[in-house]
Image 1: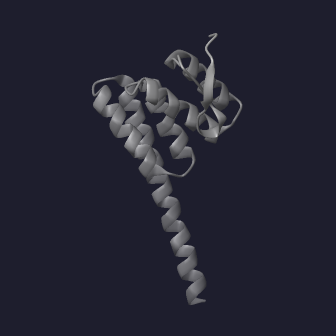
Image 2: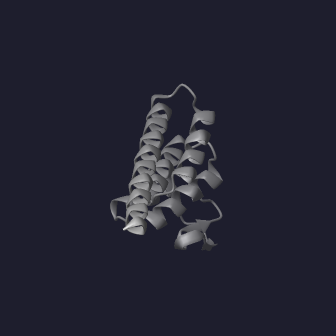
Length: 122
């Protein structure tokens, strides 16, 4: 790459004068493999700064935010993916993943509320 590093983005992800999406994507994939979700999210968001329509980054952010228990944030990225590639198989999978995640989290919230209601009445 050989560019001078200007500084560091969120979560210490390097940002250089000639940052390109492929290098940032590889960094993000490595962070996912290393099980560093916060840093991976920041790296994928950096990809979107250089390539706002990058479907891989959008899909990864849906998954990462879903896993973090943030379905509304995940859904926002899913909507962006749908706007970028409405007829893509990848986009369809992103939407299925985000809907599934939202349903699971909703179910967990209902169970949690039931438990707290039961303990309040006992």
